[in-house]
Image 1 (tube, one colour):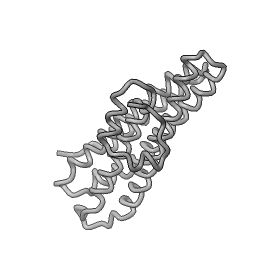
Image 2 (cartoon, helix red, strand yellow; image 1 turned 90 degrees about the vertical axis):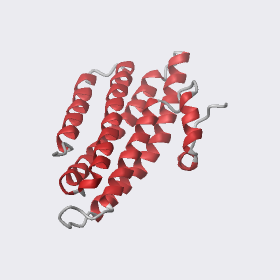
Image 3 (cartoon, rainbow, N blue to C red; image 1 turned 135 degrees about the horizontal axis):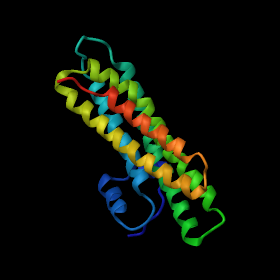
Image 4 (cartoon, rainbow, N blue to C red; image 1 turned 90 degrees about the horizontal axis):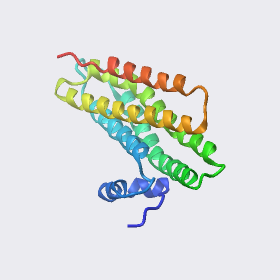
Length: 192
């Protein structure tokens, strides 16, 4: 199987089983960061699904649904962006290229973008945890778990990429990612 970088348009139409085959194969694209972006898409799709149903108190959740759809589109773009950044980083690392620091910063950028999507999802999840229909709270929990997994991957990638880039503030940035994960966990505690 040839492992090649897909454009956003190709990634948007690639069957899931083919993408998973590429993920399982050796190579940088796709990797853990792209898988994290897919998890963002899963979380966003679940948020949109729950927001499509009537809320506990009859509130209109169309704004939540629309925001989730926008996050889902962003996550699809991140799948391709992370794949390209990872391929560039691995190529620079293998060749000990002068481009290594720049490639690491670019890869860190996609991790930061993943964390930004998670941050934007927190108020949506909190709203659904508070107002979502009781039979759909498992979907809210699954969405929160997907976002949390994506954030944890992004924090690890961000720390490693910034280490390769020689960034002096990498611990501060990773710490901000950890605080974001704590906010996500707190916002999505679902009462029993």
